[in-house]
Image 1: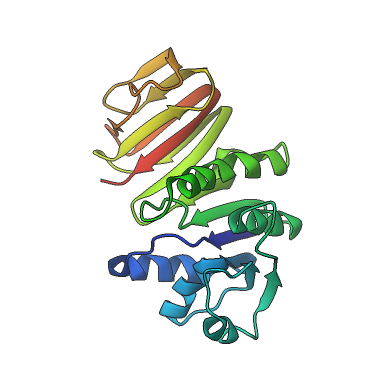
Image 2: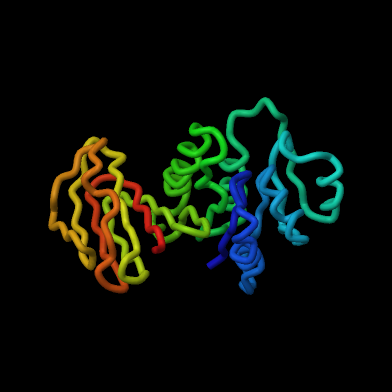
Length: 222
């Protein structure tokens, strides 16, 4: 299975530089590493190179871009119909990637619209991927958490006691079952906008979640 790691123009705290270095340099033979516009700043700071650079480059100076002249670059005009993150996802899928990790999506330093749009890129990716794809095939990741989008399916999260898990409905209502946590639920209805299913905690080393409907699932490490 070919995988893609996409680095958006987000927050990469310097104290977690080693986490992101390892995320970039994972030893996987068929892995495509993409820098989406300002995500290239992370590579520049770490002295690493992606396989593909994509964007309109309104967040990257020509001097920095010149350092990566030996890397494939796909340039778009500033006036375009999609974010650099969406273009990166589409590029990964065009290159037959079946597993996608989004880094820099969970960013609180920048505008709320980008944060929300980045998380909903999980929905776009699921729509464009083969029907056999599952929630595990595309996720947003940072040094604290992983975020998945579930659509009428189940997922098992591996972690440790004390980890947090939140389920956020994107449908008008969902039917939720969750086991392996402090507050277990069995086929309970949760309406959109409810905060009832935020900040549950792992009671063991895994949590099993089943959703009828569409929801974001956030697994935050303790």
